[in-house]
Length: 402
Ligand SMILES: *Cc1c(COP(=O)(O)O)cnc(C)c1O
Image 1 (tube, rainbow, N blue to C red):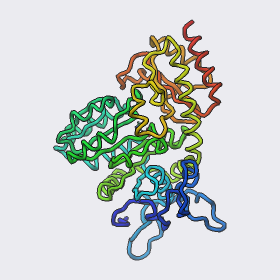
Image 2 (image 1 turned 30 degrees about the horizontal axis):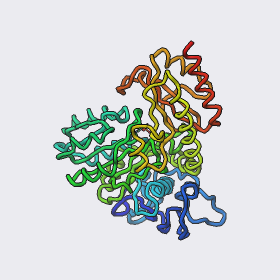
Image 3 (image 1 turned 90 degrees about the horizontal axis):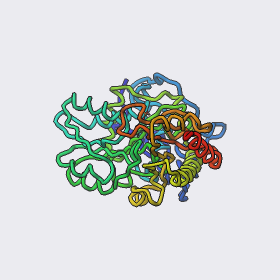
Image 4 (image 1 turned 45 degrees about the vertical axis):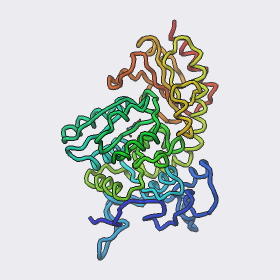
């Protein structure tokens, strides 16, 4: 097993033999909108008699006579199906820029790769205290390795107050499940002025909703399990970044831990990205429509959707987001009321996760990890007809009151 390219990461036009282009995967020289970019992302130059998206390459190792040079040597470090997917994600995260992207077996594998490759004993890291529910587990492990962990809420840019002396700032905006938003550019500037790196969890927004690297972040990290792939059938994660040295560290970590996606998962993810724009447009528009209807219901409190004009996050979100996501959160008066509501829904499955084409909702408090009220609901809007969804939710609210 050998190392390949010196910087070891797949950037736009790197490692694939493809030209660096305008983000459409081909150097057409034409500007491309999000829909065009999504359907073409990461596709190689057309070759007569070859498929548009080459099939998954199942290989633990590759033929390698003579000197063990890359690009493809051993399957824990390199795979051509990953290369195309990494190129696709890079083109969406930061069109036209030289971005390096690495795919992982899951979102948590990607998050852990950044945290554990960039932090050493004695370093300090700032995490959100209202972020993804596995972050406290990562916190305990970081502390066991001698890293100082500080936390602050996402809202109000409160992480600014605990930045001094930190090596890494971890942002999750919008946060899951509370949907708070912070001013990413402002936090990045403050962190960089103090010599800290910045990573943004871009899971909820997707690269079509927000481009953290363009807002100055060093890493855009996400779970591809959610809206990026959108069918609830694949676990995936990725890290995108511009800094070759930092990304080489992330890649080394992937190689040490081996948290790699299978070729089939990588291929399914790439295939799913072709419809990302369609799904995001539909799901996010329906999420806004549903939020507007929920706003008029007396039993609903704490309604959050960053796309609502009167949401506390709307002003900041409008400055840095291009689309506001497919998740709506709100609170019903009691746990029993929330459970009855979930039972009464017909087009919304009671399930965790979010971002899929089929709507899901859950009473988040059942997990015990998030600081949310007992009646707190996180609802992920799918690709069903918006009128059917709105009618279903209104009927379930009525039934839950009986
Ligand atoms: C789901 C999620 C993760 C973890 O992703 P997995 O693919 O489940 O490992 C990380 N961050 C956020 C915001 C998530 O929603």
